[in-house]
Image (cartoon, rainbow, N blue to C red):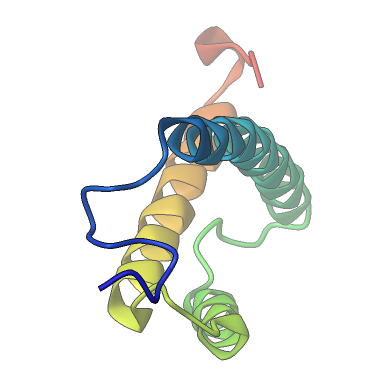
Length: 110
């Protein structure tokens, strides 16, 4: 049967595979940059909260973020997996905020 571009899952062209992997590598670099940008913004929010006497944790805002992310998901990433990633991201940024706001002895390396 030769009516399709590929006869089986094992017949991918090595050049095509390399091109796909290169795109993934480039995207991974962009994702890391964007995650760090997201973390820096979260730290700025944390500083603003502390200055205004508000707690770092804001469960209502976290629900809003998770809802917005869920609504933006058009697949193929499963919703539960995407939300688990974001919950981890939110928790990591909260820990960074808490460390940053614990005092100057912790240091700030962004």
